[in-house]
Image 1 (cartoon, rainbow, N blue to C red):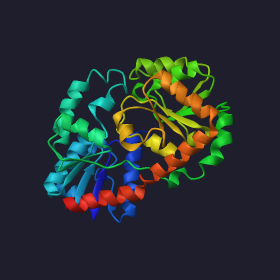
Image 2 (image 1 turned 90 degrees about the vertical axis):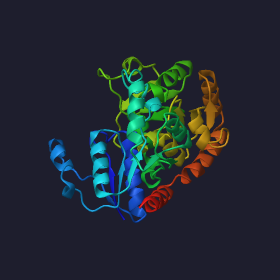
Image 3 (image 1 turned 30 degrees about the vertical axis):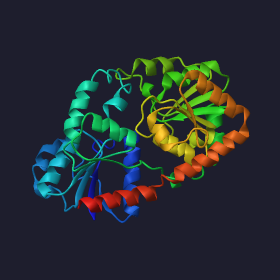
Image 4 (image 1 turned 60 degrees about the vertical axis):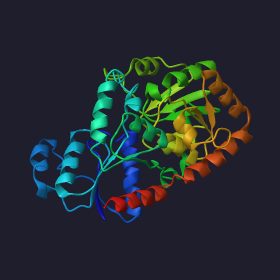
Length: 346
C-alpha cells in the first residue's frame, strides 16, 4: 500500500507537536509495511497552483492522509478526489486547543470552528488523538465519521535520557527536585499556574521548549518569560529532548485544554511521575494515584508536588506505573492501527 502522508509547511512546523505526531505516524507506518510518500509538491511553494491542476504530478497512491488544515491540505484533498482514492484528515487543531496559544487566538475561535466544521467534513474519515477530541468535533458538528487513534510515543527515541541529567542540570543551574514542563510555551498549557506554583514553593522549575515574545505572542507568555520568578528557568529550544527528561524529576503539566499531550507520554516513558490538571482528556488515558496525580486547583498542585518531593517511594511507584502506561501507546500499536484503518478504507 502506498500512502500520501502530508504535512504542509513541514519545515516551519518542525518544533511543533503536530510535526512530532506526524513523524511518529510515518515511522510507525513504515514499520507496519506501508510505503509513505510525504509530499507531491516541489519545494518551491510558488509552483503550487501549476502542480495542483496537473493530475499527472501525483504519483500512484492508494490513499491521502493530511495532517493540517491549510491550502496545501485542501489541494492534496482535491487530488485525492481526482484520483478517486480515500481522503483521511487528522484533527490536530480544534477551536478549543487553538484558543490561548497566540495573541488573538481566542477571538478568532468562532470563525475557526466554522471553517473546521466545513474542512473536516470533507474527509472520508477524520482521525483525532482521543475520545475527548472526538466529542469536541462531533459537537461542531462535523459530518465525517470520527475515529480516535493515540498519537503514541517513540520509546526508542528516549533511550539513554539518564546520561543527560548532569550536563543539562549544570547548563541551566538546576538543583534538587526539579519540576519541569516540555513543549512550546503557551498559556493554555498552564503557563501561569506553572509560574505561580514556582512562586509558592522553593523547588527549581524549568520549562524546556521554545517561546515567542513577538507581536503574535500572548500577553501571558510575554509577561512570564520576560520576568519569571527567581526559581523558574525558560530554556528555549533544546537540541535533544532527552535532556529535559533527564534533568527533570516531576513533570508538572497544568494544561487547561489538550487533545492528548505527547510530552506527558514521553515523561511517562522515562518513568517520571507526572502531575496533571484534572481534565477529561487526562481522565481518559490515566488514573489518579496509579500512574499520575490529577489536580483541580493551584493548591492541589502544590500539595501534590510537596507529597512527591517528600516521598521518593511515591515518585518511584508512580513512575513505574507510568512507564507501563506509555508502553501501551507504542508506535507499533499506532502503525498497526493506522495500517488497518487504511486497508478498511481502500
